[in-house]
Amino acid sequence: MDERTDEGKTTGKEEWLATAWQFFHDGDFNGMRACAREILSHDMDDVDGQALFAQASLYLGEEETAENIVRRLWDAAPGHWRLLLVAGEIHALRFEMRQAIDVLKRLWALGQARMGEVAPYDMAIMERAGRILTDACYLLARPDEAAEYLFELVGLLADPQTKEELYSKALFLSNYRSEGQQNRARREGINGFFGAKVTMPHTRPSSVPDRKMRIGYISPDLREHAVANFLSPFFRNFAKLDFNVFCYMTGTSDNITQRFKRSAVNWRDLQGLSPQEAARRIYRDHVDVLVDFAGHSQGSSLATLAYRPAPIQMTAIGDVGSTGLREIDYFLTDGYCSPPDRPSPEFTEQLARLAGCHLCYDPSILRPLPEPGVEPPAQRNGFVTFGSFNNFAKASRETLVLWRSVLEAVPRSRLLIKGKIASVPDGEEEVKARLANVGVDLARVDLRPYSPDYLEQYRDVDVALDTTPFTGGLTTCEALVMGVPVISLKGSTHAARIGASILENAGLPELVAANGMEYVKKAARIAGSLQILVKFHGGLREVVRGSRLMDAKGYMKNVEALYRSLWEKYCTAKDRPTAAEGSKARQYFHGI
View 1 (cartoon, rainbow, N blue to C red):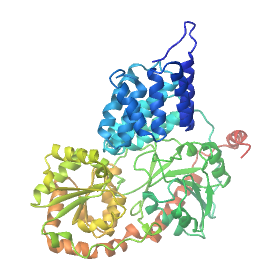
View 2 (view 1 turned 30 degrees about the vertical axis):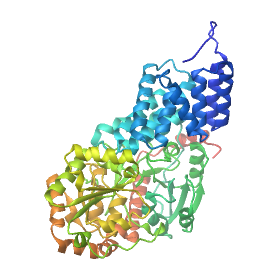
View 3 (view 1 turned 90 degrees about the vertical axis):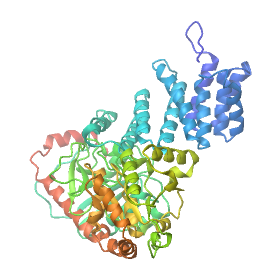
View 4 (view 1 turned 45 degrees about the vertical axis):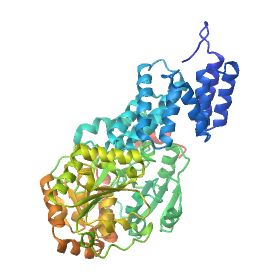
């Protein structure tokens, strides 16, 4: 694609392509188009110039212009990278995700064949293609494919911050399919992105101090976000005489953020700060225990925690897998998700088990809950409706086989699947193809797109069916408070047992299945008794509200007892840093 002079110097066209890449990086798409015009001023038929013009036009909202250029050049330049990228982006923009994937896979293969001889502006094309491929695969519920594209892309790029961001995203996507120790090596690989650094100095007290502890919470999701359903107790129900709480906001703000800010905690806005600057802010507050609510989810703060701004660091709630980061000491779990007698080799952190559930469901800060249905839909329909509002990316082949078996065990029953994947035609086709592949009768399946009133639509579901090996969290809680029983298979990892923990702590152990056969039997038994369905739909909300799952005060007592226990363990440990070691570290952070 590139042209060079005999002396090895770049041509004018190369310089304009390089400049266009910088404009793209800065978000200046008019600048990109100006570069294309400069190239075309020398040769109106130059494919690089026309493809660049098409790309800039697409980003400026002129889709028809971009499409016309691609159509005109398609047969003449079938292997042109930028042309393939623009074609893929046009398909993605129209939510033609399958076509987007097919086109971008061709570009991906061409790029991999040329690695080692790629100009920066061509690498920008590869990066863009990799990101779109990832998003397209994820939208079509192919998280394993999406993760692999990201891992491959990380190996191609040079910028450390971008590599770390994409690697972290790939690890999060890995949660959907991987189980056990097979993913641990990749998770530990996150440490390689932070390089050699001096962490912040902490010296332990000579004895456990009888004083208020200082607890810090760091999160990008103190806003309209799924995680916010579980965060209120940390800010509203803590023991104010025994704990000082500091909240470190790293994400955008909205009206939900303002509600969080009414809590009696110390608020710090870390947006726009570098990881080291953010770590310094936290360090100045002398936090004893710092709890991260993101893990590898979007907006991850692991680069900040890598500086160890607090002597004890824990990750909780926002991610279901190990961070792999050396500086994270603990992963919050419970005895249901991670029984003490079961090894958990997939975690690099020590497991900090709570008595009861490691989650406390409290959606009150977000919105009032709609009223559940007054009767099970089977009573008016004459047939049972099973349902799943889970992210369909969690619907592994094992999950689909279980759902098929449930439908076979309950004659005339139907399956309602609701979610974003059913919001676009390609998504619907993906779901139908996978269900048909395992033998599900599609005539018995209803697909519904995502909608803001999704909670009210639980009134159309008799029994919810959980996914495996990545079970539902928020969706399980929401189904229960909307009066819908949930059947969950208890797997072998933390992520595969979250549904079981929620049900056990909601006082519903009878809904937990130990194996696939039991999963089907339990679903069929409940579906086969209108009396049982009436009882669940009529009284389940009050049962859940009165359970440990929604007991914010009891939950925080357990959490604070855990903090005290970890602090005592830290203070009495024998491997305290010496005064000399503390002094050496402080020299590096003398400006803190």
